[in-house]
Image (cartoon, rainbow, N blue to C red; front, side, top):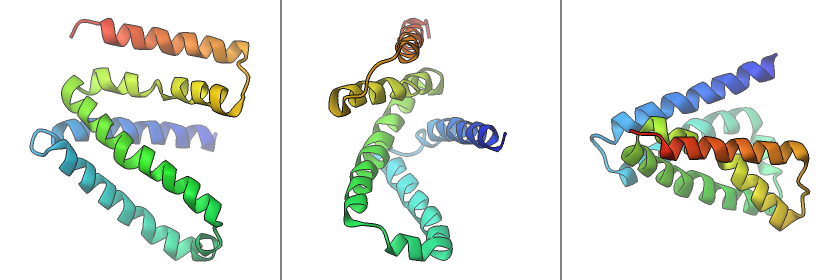
Amino acid sequence: MIAIALAVLAASSWGLSAVLVRRGLRDLSTSAGTLISLTSGFLFTTAPVVALQLDALLAVSLKAILLFGVIGILNFPIGRFFNYMAIGRLGVGRSTPLLASSPLCAVLIAVFLTGEHLTLATGAGIALILGGVLVTITAPK
């Protein structure tokens, strides 16, 4: 039950942030909004990690640091910048469902790069995602 509540809270947080991004982009460029968002997120996250788990932070392997460094570059600055551009150009209602197609990208990358196998359930999920994307991009404004 707690996991479901946390997932709903995360989804609510992302939904609210998309609306706030749309409002903020009225007065700010996408680049400046991305920089402010990344800086504030880094500062907000760093404080509790250092305060609560400094030993674990210092024990992280170089390989893990490199992997999470790549994730940090792809996810945060690049992904957030493109997300903010999409929100600014399409609006929240059209860009957010397209952003929610990230599981499709993850499945395709996992199949081609790590050799994961597609299952019937995954195939059904892909079909539903593609259907949602189709509805989103063809719906009248």
